[in-house]
Image 1 (cartoon, rainbow, N blue to C red):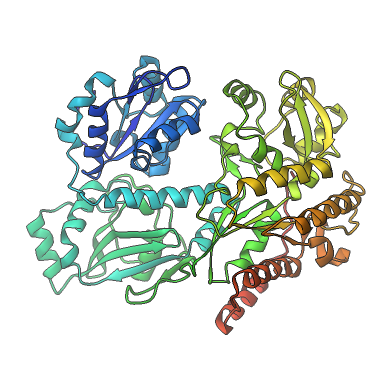
Image 2 (image 1 turned 90 degrees about the horizontal axis):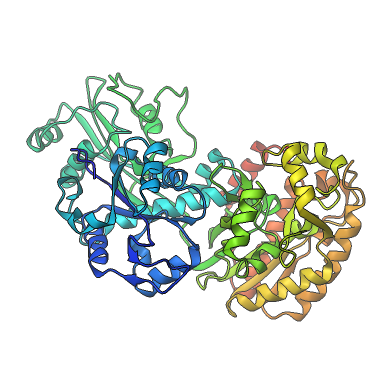
Length: 598
């Protein structure tokens, strides 16, 4: 392993023939007790651990969960994509620099690939694992309660929500409800401030590092305005993550933990302090030159109750742009804890739709060979998009829109006819070359004629999903959900809206809606928000049968809340403040007319 004075903050583990002996996809593997102890020791020193493994995500997770080890890892990347790029994704998720990361693997080619894609990363072979706790750069700081791991778990949850929300980053930040407290009594937090001063590089604007004694004198100096920054959002509490020292309108110290990178806290605080003079030293991964402070940050006191805490009803929202817009209204109902699954974001930052019932139902039966071929061949497929948390026992309610089932074209790969793919519009099949230009125009990922010709050659178009198959898939989903979980389905509009490519879509919607109504009437703990009966005229829509007005999205949100209220015997009515905020949001937001269709 390379030697350097810079502390290591993250260790990324390969699994096969590294963390354990054997190859899990081929044989039973043997866990190495010494490696387990190193993993736990690093965690108790505040050093994070992650996974980069070419494997089945489920197999690896199940193995580690069986031995009580899964929770020690953050931002795991377990799939069949190139390791160099996976490692880059892990490092970005943890908001670290490659120089602060160690990668362990038994394959020299993977170690070289990691270095090529992540210049500065440290590398190590499995034979050195037992010596790691003795290295000076892996001493960390005592963390017997694993508080650092807890902070990174919050960061991971936040990143996952952004990746599945489908919202813009600004909207995601607004939805995150970021709260900042400026704590003037810094003495109790002196050690944390000192630790950040020396560990923080990317968000240390002044890089003016002093001794503990000098820091104590600084905090006690009445002529210096000092403050430590406490940050929390709807995902959790990040703790003390920043510090400033201001004298004569000049910042002597100004630094933040990388855990809150891209939150905009450093910009918000700089404006809050009156944009004082600052001498920025070296490279910094943020700017203070924005003309106005971020509007998504709230200034609170820790004595205030935390905003928007769960009222005990945990709800997962899964679907496409229809529910994404409905969520803006649902967020005002603070009696519920809303979580979302809208899109899957692949390593190229392409947003892939993963809410079709065929993907949910088929996820357990895809083979590794099929996943590998599909991912390499089609840019609109990635094995990671098959993951969902909708079947977890922690949700009281799952709200699921089946609108993609109404719209998408269904294909069978000619070499794997036992599985299906869902993509685009069934009015524009990829097997017809005359559709290529319009498909490229309307898709949300980068496609070209060459890629579409491959799809034409490799796929058999089977039409849209049938009403019978939709009901069959939903019955499977209902059966897999915990019996106690309330399932609320959201269907599509039946209003005729002209579209140059998708004529008479409303007729298909009406047939699917009829099947869905019959299904929900017969299923226990299953309810329908019947958009087909809520929206009655073209004035309820914007540019297509699947895109609605603000009033329509609000009506759908109210119908969802009404079902939950009735089911759980509660009153979630908005107070006057929330009603005013909702009205203000409606006034500020223009009608949602997406530029992309698939």
